[in-house]
Length: 149
Image 1 (tube, rainbow, N blue to C red):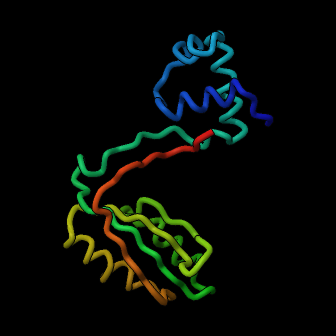
Image 2 (cartoon, rainbow, N blue to C red; image 1 turned 45 degrees about the vertical axis):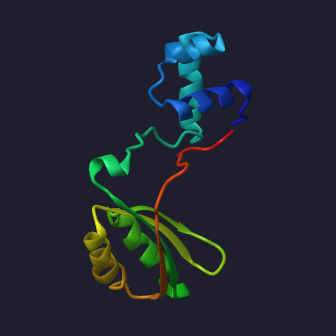
């Protein structure tokens, strides 16, 4: 699918407000509601839009501790470790990275006791991990999901 300027504007508007109605998008772009709906459906079918979701302020729902981990794994264990971590509800994101760390992971928990429990009982318990480095978030200056176009 070729993405044109109108598609990019639709994606930009949806990135800012995923609940924006077809009517409001149509008004903004001077298109019909039907044309907007068809374009969004095409973007979904082409998997340009993977899913619609909500961004929750983790602090407001009691997840007061945000930590980032760099996890090195033995090459033969990488996929199994990543899959196990990805299934864990405390893990907000997990990526395979280049550089000195194999996996980069973001974890959200209620408090430092939960973080300690996660590290000792869930992370260190996985076979194939060779090194773990953690960083605690002190303050967020910018956080976004989606892609700048």
